[in-house]
Amino acid sequence: MAERYDVLVIGAGPAGLAAASAAAAHGARVGLVDAQPRAGGQVWRHDVQHGVPALARRHAAAALENSNVTWLPQTRVVAAEAGGLLAEDAQRARHLEYGTLILATGARELLLPFPGWTLPGVTGAGGLQALAKQGWPLAGKRVVVAGSGPLLLATAASARRHGARVLAMFEQADRGTMIRFARGLWRWPARVVQAASLRAQLAGVPYRWGSVVTAAHGDDGLREVEVEEPHGRTRVACDYLAAGYGLVPNVELARMLGCRLESEGAHAHVCVDANQRTSVSNVYAVGETCGVGGRDSALIEGAIAGLAATGTTAGMARLQRRRRHARAFATHLREHFALAPHIRALAQPETLICRCEDVPLRALDGFADAREAKLATRCGMGPCQGRICGAALAEMGRFSFGSQRPPLFPARLETLASSMTEVAEPAT
Amino acid sequence: MTALVQLTVNGQAVEVVAGTSVAAAIAHADQAFRRSLSGERRSALCGMGVCFECRVTIDGVAQQQACMLPVRTGMRVVTDG
Image 1 (cartoon, one colour):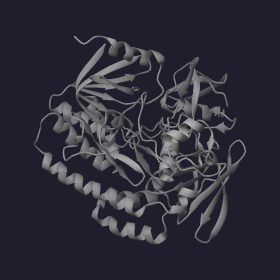
Image 2: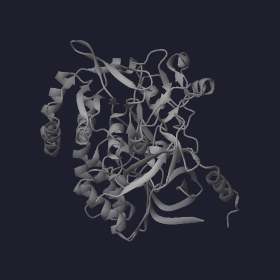
Image 3: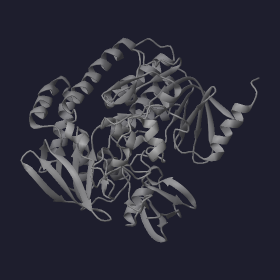
Image 4: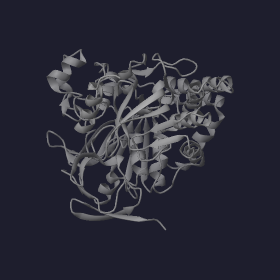
C-alpha cells in the first residue's frame, strides 16, 4: 500500500530538517526519510557520549515535533517507481508517493586509494569522526589525520574529545595556500570563530601543510604510515589513520530521477534554480547534493525549498541573499583546498581500487570506458555499487560511472518484488 | 545514569552504552569485521553506510551494515573476519 505526502524529503541532515520544518510550518503533510536511526545527517550526527549541539537539537525538534511531519528513520530509497519512490525500512518495503519531492541526500567522503588503504585501522576522516560518535573506542589510541580540508580539524578534535592521542594532521594544501585561505576568511566571521575554536581544542597537535600520507603499513591491521612532507619522508607508528580528501555530492537518486546534473571538477552535483527546483517538475534539491557548501547553505536551501514547495514567497528574497553569501564560502574552500596532482597518483599497480570486488589498479589499465571496465573486472559491481571506487576513479581521471540503475542500494528481494507487483497492476 | 546494553559478538559477551552502533560494539569486543574476496582483513571505513566494509550477520540475517544499526539487548552478531 502506498503512503502519500504533500512533500517528501529524502535525507534528515540540516538541509532536509530545514526543508521539512519549513514545509510543515506552512501546512504541508511532510514525510521525512533517512537511512540512519536518528536525524541530523553527518554534521549533526548524535554522539553517544556528548550528544549534539543546541542548534542541531533545535532544528531536529522543529521538524520531528511538528505534527505535520511523519518521521521515517532507517528507511532507504531503493528505486523510483511510477508516481513515487520505492523504499525499505528494517521490516518492509514502503511505497512513498508525493506531491513534491525534496532531495537532501547530502555528500559522502572522497576516499582516494593509496598502498595500504584497505588495512583495518585506516578510515575516512569523517569516517573516524562518525565511528567515534557511534561509540567506537578511541581512548588512548594513536590517531593520524590526513587528507585535505577543514574536516581534518573537526575529525582531530572529535578524536581527541573521545580520548585519542592525535599525533598529527597532514594537510596536502601547501603553506602559501593555507595562509591565503586564512586571509580570505574575514568575510565569514562565524567561520573564523569556528576555526579558532577547533585549533584551540587541538593545542599541541602538529598541523603539517604540504604533507601527504603515501602509504599505510601493517599485516592484519595498521601499524604505521609513511608521510611525504616538504622536507622529506617520515614514518609514524599509529593505531588509526583517518584520511579524507573532501566530499562528493550524493547524486544517485537525482540521477535516477533524471534531474540535470553538472560537473564541478571530477564530480557531479544537481543543478537547481533560485528556488531550488531541479530540471524535473516537482523535484527540488537542497544542500550538499547541489554542490558541497557546508551546513549554513544547507539550512538556507532547505528553508527555501520548503517555502517554495508550499507556494510561500514571504522571506524568500532574504534567504536567497543569505544563500549567495554562504555558497561563496564553499567556493573559497574549494579554490584553496584543490588537490595537488600527485594525490591522484598515490595508488600503485597492485593497490586495490574497488574494495568490494578486490580489483587492483593494474586490472583497470587500458579501459577508458566505465561500462567495459565493469564488465571485464567487476569494478564497481559490489554492494557499495561504485560509490567509493567510482568517485576515486573519477578523481584520478580514469573514467566515471555515469548511469544509475536500480536498486540504489542492495535491497531485499521482497522489496523489489513488491515494486514489480505494483507496476504490473493495471492503472485505474 | 547511562543505560547499558548486553549483546554477543562471535559468542563473546560485550556490554556497551545504549545508542552505540553494532560496529562500535564489535570494536569494543576486539573482534575483526570481515574478509574480502581475496581474503584480506577489513574493518569499518566510511562510518556512514556507504562503503559496506563493516557488513556482518545480525541475529541470523547476513549483510547488515554494522555502522547503521544501534545495538539491542540480546543481539547476536557474527562476523566472518
